[in-house]
Length: 219
Image (tube, rainbow, N blue to C red; front, side):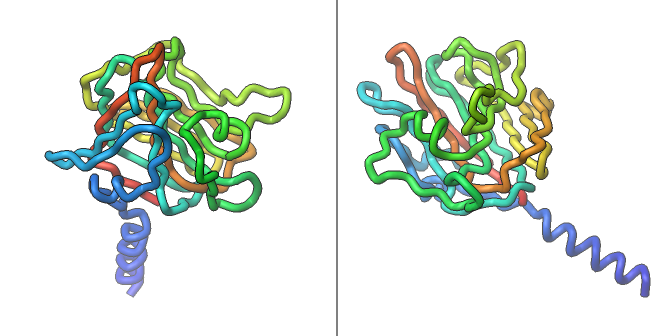
């Protein structure tokens, strides 16, 4: 009897941590913000890019809110050398709510996310902005830096698919690239959860574009 109960508990735990696999069609249904375009591509890929002339960044935001015990895995390729790649977790309005509301005329610019929303901000391909990978928490406490942890070198190049993992386990925050943990930290005042977002931005007047595939979200 004891062995039977143990088997049931193990089976239930496996169900609880089962990853939700998302197709490019699923991603295409996420809310798209900014001046640019998105589409489902052949070979199981999702594509998005900025408008070359008038973009302030483009992004997709999940319709669902997740807890503060979540892991996101996906493959991503930058298609232009100017592309900066960002992922965001625990994205929400300020305060206790895990919901998110954006103005109908939001243009994709970063100011909204820095000052008016809560999030963990993972910039893992950041060389076009003359920066190295980092994790930040927004908004910053007055007088303090939003930086939680950073790497001293850039490791990603355009035209190559990289496997990305970002995660939060309550106050533990991490970033993996191709299975290697490159950034990890502890936030004593951890965010309680929220939406997931993927953002791209070009630099020096050049536009950003990327391909995403094999997205899994495990909560």
